[in-house]
Length: 535
Image 1 (cartoon, one colour):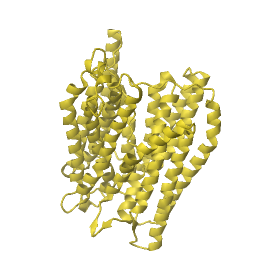
Image 2: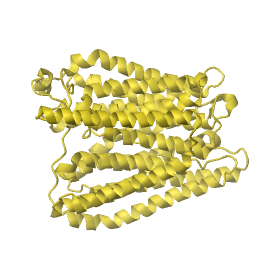
Image 3: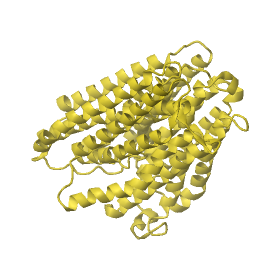
Image 4: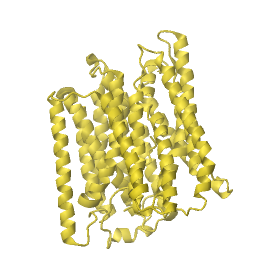
């Protein structure tokens, strides 16, 4: 997925009187930006290194034979687990921002999030000795930690720029570059270690990702107070101390109950008292999430107290939400179906040396880094010439390019079938697919974030960012459900999978294209909503 964390979502602290914040507009010690950005840049770089370091290894490890250290799980189950894990990471950002807002403050939330992530990686790394329970416990800890860290570190980036404006946007561009550098380098290192079963092994790859998070945590601990001052130190407090104490007590009790139930479920699962079918869990989870989204949108229209203009804006958000889910359900097959295709049917031999499967996962981040400036210039240039495309038009382009990426995979899959048993195709098929999908991502992902902040009714701005996270979560979940259908025992399933994905994307693009003019006409009289702020 596009490594663009929402700058709009997360908690806020009591910032008044902080000299670092007061002089942030004059601070140019980090490439012309506040020095606090260096702390956040490298912390997030290493956190994303850890996340994208294990993500492409998961399905390979879980489906590998027990004799090579894997779990020998069916591919459908392993893919579903990856989908549940990725979806949970995005969903955890919602309560993570809330906990930071009301209980911990941004800075403590980031620190303890990093601690949980590091513990999760260590648990996965040592699961070779501690068993499967430690592996899945590690995934849960990473989810909880990412929920605390991911939304709140982005919020502090916004707080470094009290003046707002173009300098703030440039600061986020630098921050995003750190994210993509981490995501680019991670699979190169963890894949090299994890896939080399003779010299290293899976758990070396997982361990390397954990070392990255530990480095980020140490960096944050050593530099945060010096460079950030009091920014994000305190949670948001109610002006009435009695009400504030009651709210904090209620939240603490609720959080304790949730963690207690989670611990009980985990303990029962590790003891063999609960048996889960990951595919069934993922399917039911997707139904629940979709129902939650529908109920929430119904609430907004029926009891949200929206004006007629706000209802129109929310209607556009619903349209973008639906098509974002469709896009992510295709795009997020990278760590499942496309990784399995790379492992089984891609010729990765370079002068007698076989390139690790996970190295191909670095293509997306490479293309994001190289293409993002071009797309930024393209949108600005079109706007200057009054030819700027609307958000639905850019979404349509995103869907079309993603469809073209999977259309390439149809050809690649049919080439494998035509070649007979043992046939493989060039890695350039996957690289070309990733290129086209990244072009689609750059058309859709940043535009989606921007649209949520522009269209959201002011009093629901934070919740609308939650809606965007839910679209990404639901897309990851669906991708996990469908992504396990690449199997050497049933190669004929591959073209069908990629064809269904391509057709779904093209139909979605055609429907959305038909809606561009009606949406533009509907929005013509609607003033743009005031952009949401970082709290």
